[in-house]
Length: 292
Length: 137
Image (cartoon, rainbow over all chains, first blue to last red):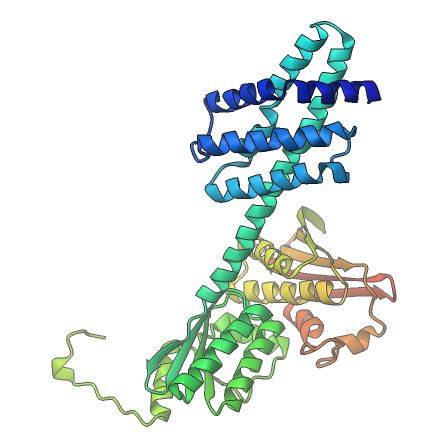
């Protein structure tokens, strides 16, 4: 871009700032597809702020490379705007439109300033268009980043949510494991379990792996670490929910689980735990209301 | 042997292992492997994908549906361009590990599958290819 074009553009922007701004805001508010999640007041303040920063950045003579320091504040403002709108529930299109809708008022100005037909006007329009496209894409990227951080947070929450430690009887805890048992989840399970052992003085913990789809050597190793830590706390672990296919896979993999008590079902594990605790149950047939 | 379909997956993070497992699971179910064999294949895939990630510093998994006149099968190939394996026989021994794992993954995967081919060059990378067959009914 020639320096005259840049100078002319930045002059135009500062000269007609007020007109461009009001036309721009007007344009945004009249957009039939405008999402209602962004209130009018914030459109006004955001637009005014953007024009102010845009004018300052454009005056520095670089309208091509927005990664340069003079555009830092504009970028920062757009990132924050994207983040805020993402949280408010706007779509990335809405947010990118914020920038793209500036094109029309700017181009109108350019055309009136240069006259409809000059090639100079066409060139300026093209340069400005490229610049605004880059800024628009920047909002989309920022939007994406915000969404990703939301996803990461949700992943973390999901991980904590699916690892409850339940007291099922005096001295007996149960941990129904669900999903993939990676090291992060094992850590969470172990911490929660050991704490609960201390809090309740439990002697037996049942780790149920019915909800764990794949048991590979890493999963097995994580389970064994949990069992070992539980033992150090003076409690015993029973692993339940071992399906036939998992049992065969464990054997083929060559994993040695000889010193771990395992049961096929949670019910068997509970029975074993209660038996070890000295509990004896008796079924009174005459008062049984459900048949087996 | 003909390759009927092929799917490729990059392995560069822990989550990718889960995605590889899910792809493998889909193919094994499609081929009507028994539940036991499905589980075996998925576990082998899990071991080998983790090796690709942890020892090979990432790479890719190729999941193929292969076809012979009288049988069909699933072939899983794991490629990396990591440091390679100095002594393959040693690496296949149960309990041998260079990390803090159990040292059962590679040998275990060989036992879980029907065919097992490993090629490795030091400082050049490793390719492990495993296949499990099912007779055509």
